[in-house]
Image 1 (spheres, rainbow, N blue to C red):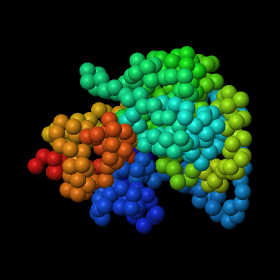
Image 2: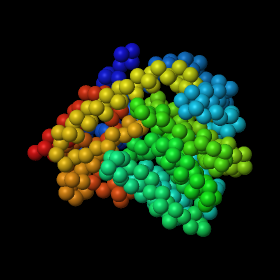
Image 3: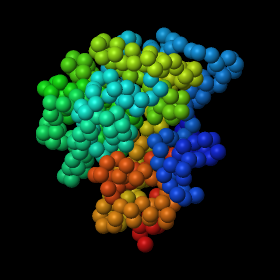
Image 4: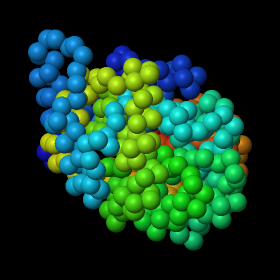
Length: 391
């Protein structure tokens, strides 16, 4: 393989949240193997590293503007990977998708308005709604045992909407359950949004991490109505492991919505871009595709490893994700309390996984595992879990 994803890189003492801060944030344990925060333990593509190093050699790191190459790299990427033709004017820079969600909530809704999420889901969705004094409406995903996958509860969604409901926050590909929603599902969701005049904020940050027989479809690309009521968030951060550079693209076709969004950014002086994020984004989107294709093969192999281990661990179940590098592990057949589950994972297995309940109450009995790591690291973590739960 041209790219060495087996390489073990020591991330300790690099101010890594994943490797240096886990005790402070989540786990009261010194020597855990961290497999939680959704960044990868792989080097970014060589082209990205080279672009950053070359820019750093210049020696002056003043205020920077986004070049035509920057915008064109995003436009070309969305067309090639998602079959979605966008225009330069639609692209708005933000330092992250979660800040963009909070901005959208503040400018498009009022305190007390209802905002729909679909749990179990990324915990900042909850915080973004509640901390902005909006009403959280949770349309919980349904697990289809026959198909062995989560689905949107469309009837529940219709019943949840009332006259004060203004927005739905969509996560696609879905974190943590790994669904890549089909065009049929997205059209059905979009129809409900149209009938009830709801805005959609679509977090599509994992849209490049897609496994065979699945295809990511931006909901805004489906039809004209959805393109005008959707704010889409994409980024190279998860794809190319550059989350620390803080570079996201918020795509808004609707000029009225876009102008309000940009005015709010101007008000907060958040329009300036990280100098290295510009170069990294261009390099990733123009010269990183070969690396990404190799990465996806490696991650898919890691999924095979997880599947084999899960079959050998009594009471542990797992639905293979269609996208993302996150595995949603189901321990509910063990019939132990969630607190006991956490103690066994953290104190006995000494593996740092994300607590399933942080994704909503329907995450009880679950843990999220980040498998974007070298095979050796993954096997070590799975061995620790297997040893504890098979005794």
